[in-house]
Amino acid sequence: MIIIDGYNVIMAAPDIFSRMPDLGAQRDHLVKLLQSYPGFRGKKIMVIFDGGQTGFPQHPASFGKIKIMYSRPEEEADDVIKRIIRENAARQSLTVVSSDRSIRNSAEDHAAGVMTASQLWKLLRSSSPKRKIDRDHPQDRELSDKEVNDWLRLFQKNTSGNHED
Picture 1 (cartoon, rainbow, N blue to C red):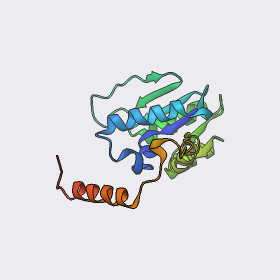
Picture 2 (cartoon, rainbow, N blue to C red):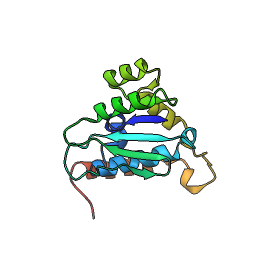
Picture 3 (spheres, rainbow, N blue to C red):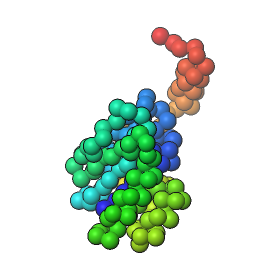
């Protein structure tokens, strides 16, 4: 089983998640990325998030082999993760994904494998398909200097608040 410290992993990739409108979109995107990673196919994955506020489901939700859990308002996700490690380490092989030192120490104390959030992102990024460039295809042709300058002027105007219609 793979146990993932959800918000810890999200915070480790601000380039991916910072433009998303809210935490719900970030959580959904993380689940989709985990589902699409070929190395996780067939593996049981548990992603734990801080519940913090009321309104989060108290019962786990499942998306295929991925189970999503939220801590109760009076506890932190870190405590839930440590409890899951204690309860499951003797019965099955565990890998824990978190950059939080106390979680990693707990995992190591129970002979579980440990991976940091950054290491997980390296895995996920290494498996993303690379599109082959076809110079004969119109969308893959190189831009002329004039086209590059036109695009740069357009983006510069749009980022400075002068939007063209």
